[in-house]
Length: 212
Image 1 (cartoon, rainbow, N blue to C red):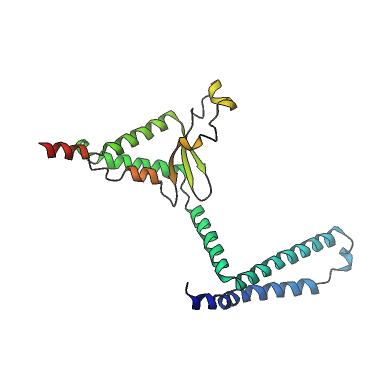
Image 2 (image 1 turned 120 degrees about the vertical axis):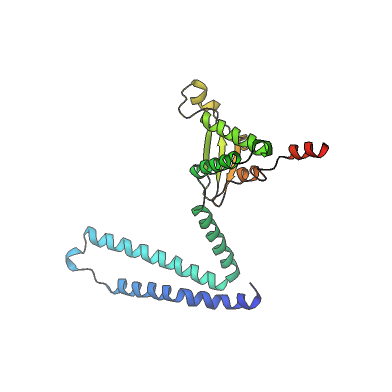
């Protein structure tokens, strides 16, 4: 954003928020001019109407102060709006465990479609290990709003042994980072994606062929 755009930004904000401000004012005038019927005065309905009137006034003041602050500090408002928009977009595209399972299955299919001699051993080992973890039932997902973590538990959810249910033997927060095996962000699991890079390239085969 150049200096000219920054100078014009407050005017654009005023033009954008002017209809909203006008609507708030019109609603406020109607509320102030509304007369409560005599038959409901002193009853629960009057108290209920006063409550909502006060609530509307509070929210109106907050909204108007926000608009005023945005017009007076356009750069800071742009930063806040960008951050809020990014968080909202990330939350809407936060991958779940189903997407992790689908990406794992797609990766396994990719490996099957290439010959065994040319498969990348790093990709093969990672896929086999994840499938073993699923068979053991220790895969877990932690939703952090804008991103998700796949981590490993000690036991299956259906396991009822003492070690599995004892609160003192649960995973500790201090060493929790050691259990994280993947990070999900923007509808993709990034560690699994990195492990599948060059999945059809076996460096050992090229090394052996070069020495012959």
